[in-house]
Length: 465
Ligand SMILES: [Ca+2]
Ligand SMILES: [Ca+2]
Image 1 (cartoon, rainbow, N blue to C red):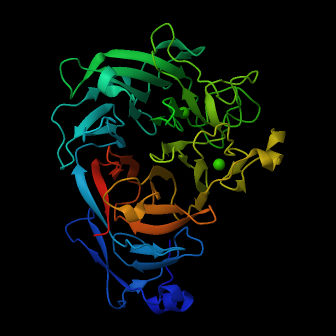
Image 2 (cartoon, helix red, strand yellow):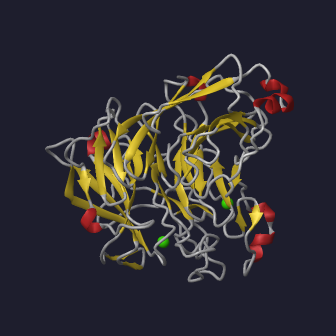
Image 3 (cartoon, protein in one colour):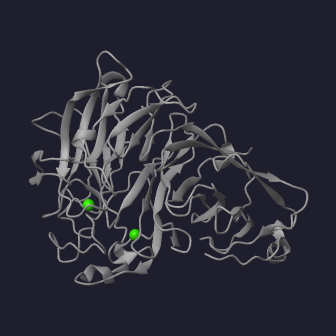
Protein backbone atom coordinates (compact mmCIF):
# COMPACT_ATOMS: atom_id res chain seq x y z
CA UNK A 1 0.00 0.00 0.00
CA UNK A 2 1.10 3.52 -0.57
CA UNK A 3 -0.07 6.87 0.59
CA UNK A 4 -0.50 10.05 -1.31
CA UNK A 5 0.95 12.18 1.44
CA UNK A 6 -0.73 15.44 0.58
CA UNK A 7 -1.54 17.79 3.38
CA UNK A 8 -4.87 18.38 4.99
CA UNK A 9 -5.37 21.52 2.91
CA UNK A 10 -5.91 19.28 -0.05
CA UNK A 11 -8.86 17.71 1.66
CA UNK A 12 -10.36 21.05 2.45
CA UNK A 13 -9.93 22.17 -1.12
CA UNK A 14 -11.53 19.04 -2.47
CA UNK A 15 -14.38 18.92 -0.06
CA UNK A 16 -15.69 22.18 1.28
CA UNK A 17 -17.99 20.33 3.63
CA UNK A 18 -14.94 19.49 5.62
CA UNK A 19 -13.63 23.02 5.76
CA UNK A 20 -14.79 23.56 9.29
CA UNK A 21 -13.73 20.20 10.54
CA UNK A 22 -10.30 19.43 11.75
CA UNK A 23 -9.10 16.66 13.91
CA UNK A 24 -6.09 15.53 15.72
CA UNK A 25 -5.40 11.93 16.35
CA UNK A 26 -4.09 10.92 19.69
CA UNK A 27 -2.65 7.50 20.32
CA UNK A 28 -1.94 5.53 23.38
CA UNK A 29 1.73 4.75 23.57
CA UNK A 30 1.00 1.88 25.91
CA UNK A 31 -0.21 -0.36 23.15
CA UNK A 32 -2.42 -0.66 20.16
CA UNK A 33 -5.47 -1.45 22.22
CA UNK A 34 -6.61 2.10 22.68
CA UNK A 35 -7.27 4.61 19.98
CA UNK A 36 -8.71 8.04 20.55
CA UNK A 37 -9.71 10.42 17.83
CA UNK A 38 -10.69 13.88 19.00
CA UNK A 39 -11.57 17.24 17.57
CA UNK A 40 -8.87 19.89 17.38
CA UNK A 41 -9.01 23.53 16.44
CA UNK A 42 -6.63 23.31 13.52
CA UNK A 43 -5.18 20.56 11.38
CA UNK A 44 -1.71 19.39 12.18
CA UNK A 45 1.08 19.15 9.70
CA UNK A 46 1.35 15.43 10.14
CA UNK A 47 -2.08 14.62 8.81
CA UNK A 48 -2.02 12.93 5.44
CA UNK A 49 -4.51 11.57 2.99
CA UNK A 50 -4.49 7.84 2.58
CA UNK A 51 -5.44 6.22 -0.67
CA UNK A 52 -5.74 2.65 0.53
CA UNK A 53 -9.38 2.88 1.47
CA UNK A 54 -12.47 1.44 -0.13
CA UNK A 55 -14.58 4.56 0.04
CA UNK A 56 -16.17 6.23 -2.91
CA UNK A 57 -17.02 9.86 -2.73
CA UNK A 58 -15.85 10.18 0.84
CA UNK A 59 -12.90 11.99 2.31
CA UNK A 60 -10.31 10.83 4.76
CA UNK A 61 -8.08 12.29 7.33
CA UNK A 62 -5.19 10.13 8.31
CA UNK A 63 -2.21 10.12 10.54
CA UNK A 64 0.94 8.18 9.89
CA UNK A 65 1.95 5.63 12.42
CA UNK A 66 4.97 3.38 12.14
CA UNK A 67 2.95 0.29 12.94
CA UNK A 68 0.83 0.58 9.83
CA UNK A 69 1.37 1.36 6.22
CA UNK A 70 -1.02 4.25 6.05
CA UNK A 71 -1.63 5.07 9.66
CA UNK A 72 -4.63 5.75 11.77
CA UNK A 73 -7.36 7.79 10.26
CA UNK A 74 -11.00 8.60 10.31
CA UNK A 75 -13.17 9.21 7.29
CA UNK A 76 -16.22 11.30 6.67
CA UNK A 77 -18.96 10.21 4.37
CA UNK A 78 -22.14 11.59 2.95
CA UNK A 79 -23.18 12.81 6.37
CA UNK A 80 -20.23 13.55 8.61
CA UNK A 81 -20.88 11.66 11.82
CA UNK A 82 -21.18 13.47 15.08
CA UNK A 83 -19.10 10.79 16.71
CA UNK A 84 -15.49 10.96 15.67
CA UNK A 85 -13.80 8.89 18.29
CA UNK A 86 -13.36 5.32 19.25
CA UNK A 87 -11.75 3.48 22.06
CA UNK A 88 -11.17 -0.20 22.24
CA UNK A 89 -11.46 -1.49 25.78
CA UNK A 90 -10.01 -4.89 26.48
CA UNK A 91 -12.58 -7.18 28.04
CA UNK A 92 -10.92 -10.57 27.70
CA UNK A 93 -7.51 -12.06 27.10
CA UNK A 94 -6.07 -15.52 26.82
CA UNK A 95 -8.59 -16.61 24.25
CA UNK A 96 -6.31 -17.41 21.33
CA UNK A 97 -8.24 -18.28 18.21
CA UNK A 98 -11.32 -16.33 19.28
CA UNK A 99 -13.84 -16.59 16.46
CA UNK A 100 -17.21 -15.80 18.02
CA UNK A 101 -18.48 -13.71 20.94
CA UNK A 102 -22.13 -14.13 21.87
CA UNK A 103 -24.54 -13.49 24.73
CA UNK A 104 -26.87 -16.08 26.20
CA UNK A 105 -29.81 -13.99 25.06
CA UNK A 106 -31.33 -14.02 28.53
CA UNK A 107 -32.35 -10.61 29.82
CA UNK A 108 -30.12 -9.57 32.67
CA UNK A 109 -27.37 -12.05 31.79
CA UNK A 110 -24.41 -9.87 30.88
CA UNK A 111 -21.94 -12.68 30.33
CA UNK A 112 -20.14 -12.84 27.00
CA UNK A 113 -19.36 -16.32 25.71
CA UNK A 114 -16.17 -16.49 23.67
CA UNK A 115 -15.58 -19.33 21.24
CA UNK A 116 -12.04 -20.38 20.39
CA UNK A 117 -11.24 -22.21 17.21
CA UNK A 118 -9.45 -24.91 19.17
CA UNK A 119 -12.73 -26.01 20.67
CA UNK A 120 -13.44 -24.17 23.91
CA UNK A 121 -16.14 -21.77 25.04
CA UNK A 122 -14.98 -19.30 27.68
CA UNK A 123 -17.08 -16.94 29.77
CA UNK A 124 -15.75 -13.40 29.85
CA UNK A 125 -16.52 -11.24 32.82
CA UNK A 126 -16.06 -8.26 30.48
CA UNK A 127 -13.44 -6.74 32.78
CA UNK A 128 -10.45 -8.36 31.11
CA UNK A 129 -10.78 -11.60 33.00
CA UNK A 130 -12.42 -14.86 32.15
CA UNK A 131 -14.16 -17.30 34.38
CA UNK A 132 -11.47 -19.79 35.39
CA UNK A 133 -13.44 -22.77 34.20
CA UNK A 134 -14.45 -23.13 30.57
CA UNK A 135 -18.14 -23.36 29.76
CA UNK A 136 -17.54 -26.14 27.23
CA UNK A 137 -14.48 -28.00 25.99
CA UNK A 138 -14.98 -29.70 22.64
CA UNK A 139 -11.28 -29.99 21.84
CA UNK A 140 -11.40 -33.76 21.49
CA UNK A 141 -14.26 -33.63 18.99
CA UNK A 142 -12.89 -30.77 16.87
CA UNK A 143 -10.37 -30.70 14.07
CA UNK A 144 -8.46 -27.48 14.57
CA UNK A 145 -6.18 -25.63 12.18
CA UNK A 146 -6.35 -23.22 9.27
CA UNK A 147 -10.03 -22.51 8.71
CA UNK A 148 -11.15 -25.56 10.69
CA UNK A 149 -12.21 -25.74 14.28
CA UNK A 150 -15.09 -24.79 16.52
CA UNK A 151 -16.54 -21.99 14.43
CA UNK A 152 -19.90 -20.90 15.77
CA UNK A 153 -22.12 -20.74 18.84
CA UNK A 154 -25.65 -19.56 19.47
CA UNK A 155 -28.02 -19.94 22.40
CA UNK A 156 -31.56 -21.17 22.06
CA UNK A 157 -34.17 -18.39 22.19
CA UNK A 158 -35.60 -20.24 25.18
CA UNK A 159 -32.22 -20.88 26.83
CA UNK A 160 -33.37 -19.63 30.21
CA UNK A 161 -35.87 -22.46 30.38
CA UNK A 162 -34.38 -25.28 28.30
CA UNK A 163 -30.63 -24.67 28.66
CA UNK A 164 -30.02 -25.47 24.98
CA UNK A 165 -27.30 -23.98 22.82
CA UNK A 166 -25.87 -24.90 19.42
CA UNK A 167 -22.37 -25.19 18.01
CA UNK A 168 -20.91 -25.51 14.52
CA UNK A 169 -17.60 -27.33 14.23
CA UNK A 170 -15.37 -29.48 12.06
CA UNK A 171 -15.39 -33.05 13.31
CA UNK A 172 -12.24 -34.88 14.33
CA UNK A 173 -13.60 -38.39 13.76
CA UNK A 174 -16.39 -40.35 12.14
CA UNK A 175 -19.80 -39.43 13.48
CA UNK A 176 -22.10 -41.62 11.45
CA UNK A 177 -24.43 -40.75 8.60
CA UNK A 178 -26.58 -37.61 8.57
CA UNK A 179 -28.47 -35.95 5.77
CA UNK A 180 -27.49 -38.92 3.63
CA UNK A 181 -23.80 -38.17 4.03
CA UNK A 182 -21.18 -40.08 6.05
CA UNK A 183 -19.74 -37.52 8.43
CA UNK A 184 -16.07 -38.02 9.17
CA UNK A 185 -12.97 -36.08 10.08
CA UNK A 186 -12.99 -32.69 8.36
CA UNK A 187 -16.76 -32.54 7.87
CA UNK A 188 -19.20 -30.08 9.40
CA UNK A 189 -21.26 -30.92 12.46
CA UNK A 190 -24.00 -28.75 13.98
CA UNK A 191 -24.97 -29.96 17.43
CA UNK A 192 -27.10 -29.00 20.37
CA UNK A 193 -25.74 -29.12 23.89
CA UNK A 194 -27.47 -28.48 27.22
CA UNK A 195 -26.44 -26.42 30.20
CA UNK A 196 -25.33 -28.32 33.28
CA UNK A 197 -28.25 -28.99 35.61
CA UNK A 198 -26.13 -27.98 38.60
CA UNK A 199 -23.84 -25.22 37.33
CA UNK A 200 -25.10 -22.24 35.30
CA UNK A 201 -21.52 -21.50 34.18
CA UNK A 202 -20.92 -24.89 32.58
CA UNK A 203 -22.37 -27.06 29.86
CA UNK A 204 -23.07 -30.75 30.21
CA UNK A 205 -20.33 -32.23 27.99
CA UNK A 206 -22.32 -35.42 27.53
CA UNK A 207 -25.47 -33.71 26.31
CA UNK A 208 -24.65 -33.52 22.60
CA UNK A 209 -27.49 -34.05 20.15
CA UNK A 210 -26.17 -33.94 16.61
CA UNK A 211 -28.61 -31.82 14.60
CA UNK A 212 -27.06 -31.80 11.15
CA UNK A 213 -23.88 -32.83 9.36
CA UNK A 214 -22.54 -32.45 5.85
CA UNK A 215 -19.47 -33.18 3.77
CA UNK A 216 -16.59 -30.79 3.39
CA UNK A 217 -14.51 -31.52 0.29
CA UNK A 218 -11.63 -29.30 1.42
CA UNK A 219 -10.27 -27.90 4.65
CA UNK A 220 -11.10 -24.28 3.83
CA UNK A 221 -14.36 -22.31 3.33
CA UNK A 222 -16.43 -23.82 6.11
CA UNK A 223 -18.62 -20.85 6.99
CA UNK A 224 -19.66 -21.86 10.46
CA UNK A 225 -21.98 -19.10 11.61
CA UNK A 226 -25.11 -19.77 13.65
CA UNK A 227 -27.89 -17.30 14.45
CA UNK A 228 -31.51 -17.47 15.46
CA UNK A 229 -33.69 -15.27 13.33
CA UNK A 230 -36.53 -13.13 14.59
CA UNK A 231 -38.75 -16.00 13.42
CA UNK A 232 -37.22 -18.34 16.00
CA UNK A 233 -35.56 -20.56 13.40
CA UNK A 234 -31.89 -21.53 13.34
CA UNK A 235 -29.85 -20.09 10.48
CA UNK A 236 -26.54 -21.69 9.45
CA UNK A 237 -23.88 -20.32 7.12
CA UNK A 238 -21.80 -22.65 4.98
CA UNK A 239 -18.93 -21.93 2.62
CA UNK A 240 -18.55 -23.33 -0.87
CA UNK A 241 -16.66 -26.30 0.51
CA UNK A 242 -13.23 -25.00 -0.32
CA UNK A 243 -10.44 -25.30 -2.76
CA UNK A 244 -10.37 -22.23 -4.98
CA UNK A 245 -12.87 -20.71 -7.36
CA UNK A 246 -15.62 -23.06 -6.15
CA UNK A 247 -14.03 -25.76 -8.27
CA UNK A 248 -15.82 -28.82 -6.90
CA UNK A 249 -18.43 -30.10 -9.30
CA UNK A 250 -19.67 -33.04 -7.24
CA UNK A 251 -23.32 -31.98 -7.23
CA UNK A 252 -23.61 -29.69 -10.24
CA UNK A 253 -21.38 -28.94 -13.21
CA UNK A 254 -20.84 -25.39 -12.00
CA UNK A 255 -19.53 -25.61 -8.45
CA UNK A 256 -21.43 -25.72 -5.17
CA UNK A 257 -22.63 -22.23 -4.40
CA UNK A 258 -25.00 -21.95 -7.36
CA UNK A 259 -26.06 -25.58 -6.93
CA UNK A 260 -29.24 -26.18 -4.93
CA UNK A 261 -28.41 -29.88 -4.52
CA UNK A 262 -25.77 -29.23 -1.86
CA UNK A 263 -25.58 -27.51 1.51
CA UNK A 264 -22.35 -25.78 0.51
CA UNK A 265 -22.23 -22.07 -0.25
CA UNK A 266 -25.53 -21.33 1.50
CA UNK A 267 -27.43 -19.81 4.36
CA UNK A 268 -29.76 -22.49 5.64
CA UNK A 269 -32.84 -22.21 7.84
CA UNK A 270 -34.12 -25.02 10.04
CA UNK A 271 -36.54 -25.46 12.94
CA UNK A 272 -34.83 -27.08 15.91
CA UNK A 273 -37.67 -26.72 18.41
CA UNK A 274 -38.33 -30.09 19.98
CA UNK A 275 -35.34 -31.71 18.27
CA UNK A 276 -34.61 -35.30 19.27
CA UNK A 277 -32.87 -38.35 17.85
CA UNK A 278 -35.87 -39.33 15.75
CA UNK A 279 -36.43 -35.87 14.28
CA UNK A 280 -33.37 -33.67 14.54
CA UNK A 281 -34.98 -30.67 12.87
CA UNK A 282 -37.91 -29.67 10.73
CA UNK A 283 -38.12 -27.61 7.56
CA UNK A 284 -39.90 -24.36 8.40
CA UNK A 285 -42.88 -23.40 6.25
CA UNK A 286 -41.82 -20.87 3.64
CA UNK A 287 -38.33 -22.14 2.94
CA UNK A 288 -37.93 -21.01 -0.67
CA UNK A 289 -36.74 -24.29 -2.23
CA UNK A 290 -38.69 -26.78 -0.14
CA UNK A 291 -40.86 -27.55 -3.16
CA UNK A 292 -38.11 -27.56 -5.78
CA UNK A 293 -37.16 -31.01 -7.09
CA UNK A 294 -33.55 -31.85 -6.31
CA UNK A 295 -33.02 -28.85 -4.07
CA UNK A 296 -32.10 -29.07 -0.42
CA UNK A 297 -35.13 -27.82 1.48
CA UNK A 298 -32.93 -26.32 4.20
CA UNK A 299 -31.59 -23.62 1.83
CA UNK A 300 -32.58 -20.03 2.61
CA UNK A 301 -30.02 -18.09 0.50
CA UNK A 302 -27.35 -19.28 -1.93
CA UNK A 303 -24.49 -18.10 -4.11
CA UNK A 304 -22.12 -17.50 -1.19
CA UNK A 305 -18.41 -18.27 -1.15
CA UNK A 306 -17.43 -18.20 2.50
CA UNK A 307 -19.83 -16.19 4.62
CA UNK A 308 -17.48 -15.43 7.49
CA UNK A 309 -20.14 -14.07 9.71
CA UNK A 310 -23.69 -13.13 9.16
CA UNK A 311 -26.05 -11.48 11.60
CA UNK A 312 -29.51 -10.09 12.07
CA UNK A 313 -30.26 -6.49 12.88
CA UNK A 314 -31.78 -6.82 16.36
CA UNK A 315 -34.31 -4.10 15.59
CA UNK A 316 -35.39 -4.75 12.01
CA UNK A 317 -34.59 -8.44 11.50
CA UNK A 318 -32.66 -7.63 8.33
CA UNK A 319 -29.79 -10.00 7.53
CA UNK A 320 -26.23 -8.87 6.82
CA UNK A 321 -23.62 -11.24 5.43
CA UNK A 322 -19.88 -10.69 5.11
CA UNK A 323 -18.89 -12.92 2.17
CA UNK A 324 -15.18 -13.50 1.68
CA UNK A 325 -13.96 -12.99 -1.87
CA UNK A 326 -11.65 -15.04 -4.04
CA UNK A 327 -8.80 -12.86 -5.24
CA UNK A 328 -10.10 -9.33 -5.54
CA UNK A 329 -13.47 -8.39 -4.06
CA UNK A 330 -14.87 -8.61 -0.54
CA UNK A 331 -18.55 -7.91 -0.04
CA UNK A 332 -21.40 -7.19 2.33
CA UNK A 333 -24.71 -8.77 1.38
CA UNK A 334 -28.12 -7.78 2.62
CA UNK A 335 -31.54 -9.41 2.80
CA UNK A 336 -34.54 -7.62 4.24
CA UNK A 337 -36.25 -9.30 7.16
CA UNK A 338 -38.13 -12.41 6.12
CA UNK A 339 -36.92 -12.42 2.52
CA UNK A 340 -35.40 -15.73 1.47
CA UNK A 341 -34.20 -17.32 -1.75
CA UNK A 342 -31.65 -14.70 -2.67
CA UNK A 343 -28.78 -15.61 -4.96
CA UNK A 344 -25.72 -13.61 -3.98
CA UNK A 345 -23.81 -14.47 -7.12
CA UNK A 346 -20.75 -16.57 -6.40
CA UNK A 347 -19.14 -18.16 -8.53
CA UNK A 348 -20.72 -16.30 -11.42
CA UNK A 349 -19.71 -13.08 -9.68
CA UNK A 350 -17.13 -12.00 -7.16
CA UNK A 351 -18.71 -8.89 -5.71
CA UNK A 352 -20.25 -7.13 -8.70
CA UNK A 353 -17.55 -8.45 -11.07
CA UNK A 354 -17.78 -11.49 -13.31
CA UNK A 355 -15.77 -14.36 -11.90
CA UNK A 356 -16.74 -17.18 -14.25
CA UNK A 357 -19.85 -18.11 -16.19
CA UNK A 358 -18.37 -21.52 -17.04
CA UNK A 359 -20.87 -24.36 -17.35
CA UNK A 360 -23.75 -22.30 -15.96
CA UNK A 361 -26.21 -20.69 -18.34
CA UNK A 362 -27.93 -18.99 -15.39
CA UNK A 363 -24.96 -16.70 -14.90
CA UNK A 364 -25.95 -14.63 -17.90
CA UNK A 365 -29.35 -13.84 -16.36
CA UNK A 366 -28.45 -10.80 -14.29
CA UNK A 367 -31.96 -10.67 -12.86
CA UNK A 368 -31.26 -13.76 -10.77
CA UNK A 369 -28.66 -12.10 -8.62
CA UNK A 370 -28.70 -9.89 -5.57
CA UNK A 371 -25.78 -7.51 -5.66
CA UNK A 372 -23.82 -6.69 -2.54
CA UNK A 373 -24.65 -3.45 -0.73
CA UNK A 374 -20.93 -2.83 -0.39
CA UNK A 375 -17.74 -4.21 -1.87
CA UNK A 376 -14.07 -3.37 -1.60
CA UNK A 377 -11.01 -4.70 -3.31
CA UNK A 378 -7.79 -6.14 -2.02
CA UNK A 379 -6.06 -2.81 -1.90
CA UNK A 380 -8.08 -2.34 1.29
CA UNK A 381 -8.06 -5.80 2.81
CA UNK A 382 -8.00 -9.48 2.00
CA UNK A 383 -10.83 -11.23 3.81
CA UNK A 384 -13.95 -9.62 5.21
CA UNK A 385 -14.88 -10.18 8.84
CA UNK A 386 -18.62 -9.65 8.93
CA UNK A 387 -20.11 -7.76 11.85
CA UNK A 388 -23.30 -6.43 13.36
CA UNK A 389 -25.73 -3.57 13.15
CA UNK A 390 -25.20 -1.40 16.21
CA UNK A 391 -28.28 -1.35 18.45
CA UNK A 392 -26.67 -0.64 21.77
CA UNK A 393 -27.57 2.12 24.16
CA UNK A 394 -24.18 3.76 24.76
CA UNK A 395 -23.69 5.32 21.34
CA UNK A 396 -27.02 6.32 19.79
CA UNK A 397 -25.20 8.21 17.02
CA UNK A 398 -24.18 4.83 15.59
CA UNK A 399 -27.68 3.35 15.79
CA UNK A 400 -28.48 1.33 12.69
CA UNK A 401 -24.91 1.30 11.43
CA UNK A 402 -23.39 -1.98 10.27
CA UNK A 403 -19.89 -2.30 11.70
CA UNK A 404 -17.46 -4.78 10.16
CA UNK A 405 -13.78 -5.40 9.60
CA UNK A 406 -11.25 -7.29 7.52
CA UNK A 407 -8.75 -9.87 8.63
CA UNK A 408 -5.89 -8.13 6.85
CA UNK A 409 -6.67 -4.45 7.27
CA UNK A 410 -7.43 -4.24 10.99
CA UNK A 411 -9.85 -1.40 10.31
CA UNK A 412 -13.40 -1.05 11.57
CA UNK A 413 -15.76 0.19 8.90
CA UNK A 414 -19.15 1.78 9.51
CA UNK A 415 -21.73 1.19 6.81
CA UNK A 416 -24.99 3.15 6.93
CA UNK A 417 -28.11 3.40 4.82
CA UNK A 418 -28.45 6.65 2.91
CA UNK A 419 -31.74 8.42 2.33
CA UNK A 420 -31.89 6.86 -1.14
CA UNK A 421 -31.63 3.43 0.60
CA UNK A 422 -28.22 2.61 -0.84
CA UNK A 423 -25.41 2.06 1.63
CA UNK A 424 -22.16 3.93 2.13
CA UNK A 425 -19.26 3.93 4.52
CA UNK A 426 -19.52 6.74 7.02
CA UNK A 427 -16.50 6.14 9.19
CA UNK A 428 -13.29 4.18 9.24
CA UNK A 429 -11.42 3.44 12.42
CA UNK A 430 -7.86 2.20 12.26
CA UNK A 431 -7.56 -0.04 15.30
CA UNK A 432 -3.81 -0.38 15.20
CA UNK A 433 -4.09 -4.14 15.45
CA UNK A 434 -1.48 -6.00 13.46
CA UNK A 435 -2.46 -7.22 10.04
CA UNK A 436 -3.83 -10.76 9.85
CA UNK A 437 -5.52 -10.50 13.20
CA UNK A 438 -9.17 -9.39 13.27
CA UNK A 439 -10.99 -12.69 13.44
CA UNK A 440 -14.48 -11.78 14.56
CA UNK A 441 -16.92 -9.22 15.82
CA UNK A 442 -19.43 -9.90 18.54
CA UNK A 443 -22.51 -8.38 20.12
CA UNK A 444 -23.58 -8.60 23.74
CA UNK A 445 -27.00 -8.73 25.31
CA UNK A 446 -27.19 -4.94 25.44
CA UNK A 447 -26.24 -4.56 21.79
CA UNK A 448 -22.71 -3.30 22.43
CA UNK A 449 -20.12 -4.57 19.96
CA UNK A 450 -16.80 -6.36 20.39
CA UNK A 451 -13.85 -7.20 18.19
CA UNK A 452 -11.49 -10.14 18.63
CA UNK A 453 -7.97 -10.60 17.41
CA UNK A 454 -6.86 -14.10 16.69
CA UNK A 455 -3.94 -13.96 19.12
CA UNK A 456 -6.41 -13.91 21.97
CA UNK A 457 -7.74 -10.54 23.08
CA UNK A 458 -11.30 -9.27 22.86
CA UNK A 459 -12.15 -5.56 22.96
CA UNK A 460 -15.36 -3.63 23.37
CA UNK A 461 -15.82 -1.00 20.66
CA UNK A 462 -16.60 2.37 22.24
CA UNK A 463 -17.40 5.52 20.33
CA UNK A 464 -17.57 9.17 21.11
CA UNK A 465 -14.75 9.45 23.59
CA1 LIG B 1 -14.39 -26.89 3.56
CA1 LIG C 1 -21.67 -12.19 -4.08
